Image 1: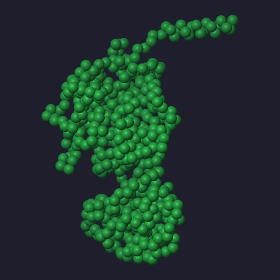
Image 2: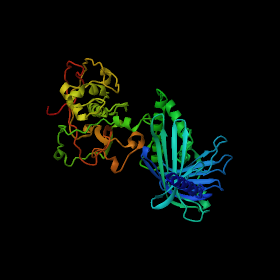
Image 3: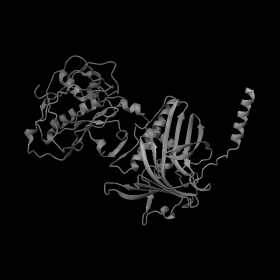
Amino acid sequence: MWCYCVAAVLLFTVIGTEGKAVLSPPEFGKTYHVKGVISLPYAEIKEPFEAWFDTAGKSSRIDYYYGQVCTYQLATQQPSGVSYKITPETTEEELNVMKCFQVNGTKDEPVSPQGTLPDLQGFQFLRMEYYSGSLCEVWQNVTTVGYKKNTYTLWVSRAGAPKDPAVPHHYEMMGYDTLLGSHYDKYLVDYNEFSPKVDPKVFSLPEGMSCGAFPGPGLEHHLLANPMKDLIHPPATGHASRMFGHFKEKFQRRYDDEREHHKREHAFVHNLRYVHSKNRAGLSFSLALNPLSDRTVTELATMRGRRHGKTPNRGLPFPSSMYDGVQVPDSLDWRLYGAVTPVKDQAICGSCWSFSTTGAIEGALFMKTGQQQVLSQQMLIDCSWGFGNNGCDGGEEWRGYEWIMKHGGIATTETYGAYMGMRKANLRNISCPSISCRLDPWTERTLPPEPVAAGGAHPELHQRHVGQRRGPQASAVQERPRGGQHRRLAPVLRLLQPRRLLRARLRQHGGGPGPCGAGRGLRDPEG
């Protein structure tokens, strides 16, 4: 009897399943207007966009950051179509002037309308569920290319008649690299507004606007003209992959194996997206790719070596009463005078504190002697462990000053040896000539390049190109940010309020035994 019951239940389930109507993939119509936000968690990006799409007219337009950047993809122009980008441009002569740039399609790579909704070919119905209060169909596509397994999922609703266009709500992609055994990519799109109606006038360029070619090499032009192409269901070998090949050649990258290559390419793509997204936002600065662009978040964190200790740094209080009524300049750029030595690469080593220490002393020496002296960060990395610094694992600049005062000075790079980005295994005795001088307070000669601690966890600082970073997140002295601080030198001083100056006396001190011998030293005026 029990067997008959089980058979009856199974028969009923099969019949019930066969009786269900099979859902057809959703369609969005031949034209649509949509607003939304693209989120790239791994690149820390949330970018608002507004898009218009017309299949019959072979045209599309996508605006980013509420119209800061407008892009057009017009397949009807030229033999192979044209992409346009309208964006504000600032040069030495102009400030935020709207300019138009164009990229012509080719026979091998024609321009076609760019959608902001996914192509649902290959998607399968998964389930029904609520998303943001709307009952939605969930459609999914799982694609495997080589080691990469990409899962695309779309949430849509159908509020009208069966033939009416579906309404998109949310779209997400999750990429998994089976070689690395980890997720390598993720992006989310939230669609806030959707309409099947489009005014054809939106595809016309502004009246009187003339367009020219993008300046500079053409490798990034396609990404600049149509950013969405490498975000929404990009091809396996898109522009980002070609950019990575150029990056490897430019910076002479040679990776050990295929696994390392995958890891670096994933990091590069995230940084590439971040750079272009921030540049579309119309900020007070711009970003660019650089030698750090294939580094992971963890690796970049190891370079932020400024420790946040609670030990008093023995800094002297600023005697503000002595300078009442003294006029100081609003700003002073010591780079123009030669007080700042060339920018150096700290490599994968959390030694920023040592560069800040030597930079302040180099500036003080220049003001007294009129000559540049490149001092040795390597010496501080090797020798100041007894004062609480930990070499490439971080330190504090004031501990470097303490070590210098205790041991009579610091050597130049020429006498001690080149920077290695690691602690030396074999140290050697050195003895260097020194300079004796005293700096007078609060004159232009005593405003040296100033060491400051900045929250270095923000990726804007890793890829910064030109311009000044402003806003609440840009303040130099903050609560300790997640991921640590990065110590740097401020060659441009903006004197908006009285500052505590570094009062220093550089005096001669003979060479002593050991690898941390004498050199050019920083001395307490009272010591």
